Structures are given as C-alpha cells and as structure tokens.
Image (cartoon, rainbow, N blue to C red; front, side, top):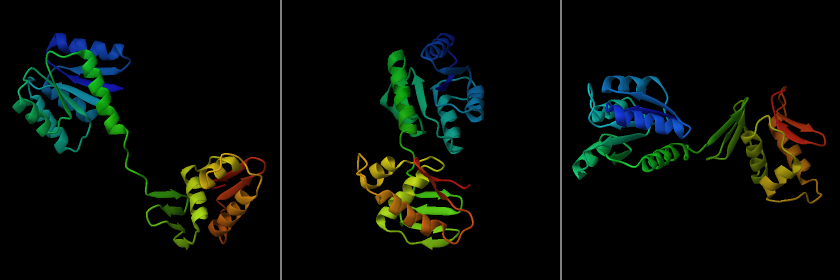
Length: 225
C-alpha cells in the first residue's frame, strides 16, 4: 500500500517511514503542513498518517480542507494530546482514527489495515449491467437492447445476468448449471442448450450484430464479434 506520513518530528517521521517500508509498503514523508496538504491533493494514497501539531498548517486544518474538497482517503491522526476533547475534535473534523503518542508501531499498522479494509471492502452494489447496446436493470429486472424491452422469465434473466457479469469470458455448461440451477454437476440434460437458445432468440433476433455465441464443446460467451 501507499501511505503519506505528515510529521515534523525527525525521529518519529523517520521511524514511521522506515517501518512502513520494512512492512512492504511505500511511504512518502513530508515535514510540514503545506507540503502535506499538497501531497495529499496531488497523489493517490491508501491512507494518511499525520501529526496534529505541524508547522505551516496544523493537522486538523489539513483534514478540514481535504474533506471540504471531497477527498475521502482514510486519515489517522497521531498526537501527544490525549484528552477526550482532543480526540473528539480530531474525529469531528473528519479523521477516521486517532492514536496518541507514544504509540505501538504494531497497533498503528493494525489500525491502518483496518481503515483501508473499511474503505475498500464494501463497494457500492451494482444495480445496472451494460454491454454493447444491451442493458440489464437488476432492481426493476428489466432488460433492454437498443432501447427495446426484452421480456425474460426468471431463469432467462438469471442466465443473461451471469453472461453480462462475465462478458467475453467463456462459460461452460457446468458453470451455468451451477450458477443458474445450483447444480454441482452435469445431469446429462440439454436444459442449458434450451435456455441459451431461448435467451439468444430474445436478445439477438432482429439485430445484425449477434451477442450470444456458442463455442462447440466448450460453452457460451457474450461478445460483440
């Protein structure tokens, strides 16, 4: 991961930068508030670690400005000020965590990992899939191609959703059985062929460019050519 350390204390800043690099991460270290604000704006970082008391611009003002600019990078404040009021002030302006000095490096790394996980582990759920001129709305369960509505039964919708979540990837019959029917094996039926044929007719009929293709002996694929 890539971290930005904003710390004017030479010993602490050097310790943090070296420790993070020894953990296998990349660490940028700047020593005043002005440089810290500029680096936070101009480069992508997985998280910021900043001292509260800094020359130029203090840590809380840096956080205020970044949050006002909609920069949502996780921020961990380091400070010798340990009162409840100080911690509340840091969190109140938009910091994600607050660690008092002196601190355990192992705890700092654990907190950083937790902050990054919270930021990356829960992306917004996908509610609309699109490929070429084909769209699938997962909320309304409505499929369209070039603006034309496609009426799909439940299994047909499930198959088309699976294809559209894996465009240009060949899906075998076994994979489709497992996903659409929840079968873990091929029951030696032609249900997949029949279902694909129905969906292909509804999706491709009347269009010069076909989207659903059969690879004999291999499976099926959604692609433009």
